[in-house]
Image (tube, rainbow, N blue to C red):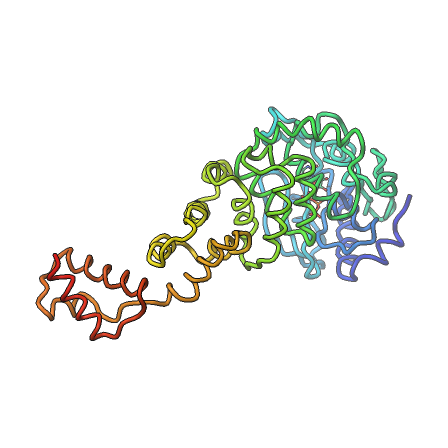
Length: 405
Ligand code: CTP
């Protein structure tokens, strides 16, 4: 198969020109170069191509330094794994040396050696990502399809290349579900069986690797349905046993859809809120989510522990240190009584404050020391339970509380 027409039709003009130049230059240096991975998959699906990934059967970094100087290139970055990012015609391109990968243990990073394009395609996750199209001028647009990727694109399913794929790299479990959700593809039968079997290997992944994959899932346009798929494939239970099972999980999740919190951590707020309260801090530790999210988990537990019929001052005391984000997440799923307490706190109690301070108390003869703080807090509690007081009333109360000591 040759996709030269598709290249011209689907790529933007700068993308097309950039690839033409690179193909020509690599060819002159005597090496084969190919569009690969998501670039070729999306091209074949006639989806917009956002990233350009090119594989070269040599170290690309060495070769680009020898390119014809009439093509100005910006070297953006170069990594130890013989991959680099460049800009040509204002177009970012990822270049990588064709490689073989050996996984020393499940979930560990692979040991990499240089290889042919054929080997490189064989190390990949799914057949739809294991396609390549040559960009050398004599073979421009020729597709290399060693793993029936074209057929799988037609069949609209995601299929692994070999039975050990998920074991080698359990992040592929997330990737499989992500592509299935994004492209509306099914998961091919044997791949599905293997995925369900191998989900136990998710336990081998570090918290950071899981977090990265979850962040990718949630940056997808249809993140919610991908989340549902993760639940159906029982992936969440392998991340942590504290995730509630169906139907509670779906109910809670659908309630959470109504809140919109514009922060990159949003997905993790949702995940934490979905887990059993006594397991939240454990999940946060497992995923290495850091202090801000630990505080969020603790805050949520605190909110959920708030008793029905708590006094106004009790509500104030429990919630005063709690973050706004924890309150807004909890508001989205809390039962009616708890939601009223949260609304009372946000709309009224939180706005009540003293208009006197330690100086005012010392001015009426109360000696400096811990009593000052105690008296101020008693006045505030009184106002929260019984309504605001003017400055004169607050001073009067201070005198009374002092004489009661
Ligand atoms: N890949 C893999 N196994 C992984 C990660 C990546 O085999 N665990 C391969 C796939 O062939 C993939 C390519 O590396 O196509 C590039 O990976 P990535 O940039 O993550 O994915 P894309 O295919 O570009 O897809 P996306 O549109 O999600 O960026």
